[in-house]
Amino acid sequence: MKKLVKPFILLTAFVAGVSCSSGGGDEGSNQEKGVVNVYTHRHYDVDKELFARFDSLTGIKVNVISANADELIVKLKQEGPTTQCDVLITTDAARINKAKKEGLLQPTQNEELMKTLPSNLVDDEGYWYGIAQRARVIAVKKGLGESLANLSYEDLANPEWKGKVIMRSSENSYNQSLLANLIANHGEEWAANWVEKVVANFAREPKGNDRDQVKNIAAGEGEITFVNSYYLGKMENSPDPATRFAFTNVDVIYPNQQSTGTFVDVSAAAVTKYAKNKENAIALIQFLLSKESQQLIADKNFEYPAIEGMKLKSSLPTLAEFKRDTVDIELTGELNAAAVKAFDKGGWR
Ligand code: FE2
Image (cartoon, rainbow, N blue to C red; front, side, top):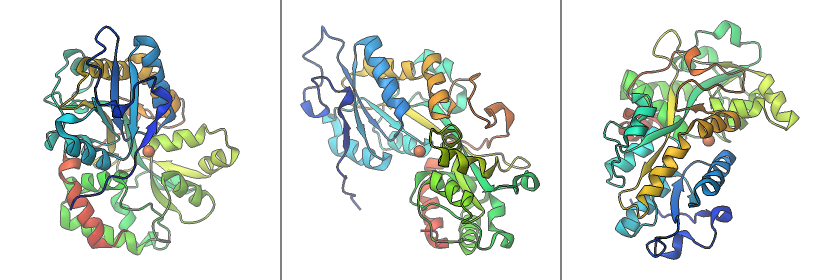
């Protein structure tokens, strides 16, 4: 079952004379501020800006290897104690908990960080810290929103949506974590049944990313889909008129307001078990959780910040303005395999 690790994209913009593959860590440069080596699933411009700021503020170079979290976890396992990776960043709670379970992280129990974050955004044992949040919401054809204010994820299985549902692939972690959350609420059997009924409502085979689904609905292909909240914020504020047009031509619904609440996932950072630059790793995570960094994440990536009391430059509701699901976010990791199985069983490719 070993999966081959695809070639990684090395973001050399932050590498000044030191590369992740240099082999010697920064043991020989004690007088210097050194480096921090990051493996990240996050693929956002705001992260590049944050790492550059951290570099100029501290003199610590940030070396980044970017890939999807499953690939990064395989890489960390293969490298074992020889890894040069100090910080692992995922876009979901499921993958960071998987890394924890596989013994790839170390607890830091940084008091300052644990104090900064609400308890649902920090691992009880200090293995990981949430850095941003995203709601998995529903976009529908313009005009439908008002009558669907009480819509739930569960409702997409109803026959009234026949031929109207469009979705991205079930291989994507965003849909897997949402289904894991639904399994936590309803059980595996229910989930496979729900998948089957949603698939029966598909207008087409799954394809494209979150933003493509929204654009497709705005263009009249399908009437309902799932999308992460920050993509809607990005579309609303896009420099591209066609993208802004797509945003204004759908209605956005935060589902399950009458029941379990909207599912909110967490993007998280952790110090790896064999980090060679542990202090720099903690300094980077602290920096990502500073007010300035969190505001930048909100302003430029339209994610909900991890620390409380920050505003989004968007028409999307603030975290305080909608009911969120309160099922333990760690369950999305434990139930990930069950979610993949239910997608498979129900025929959502
Ligand atoms: Fe994303």
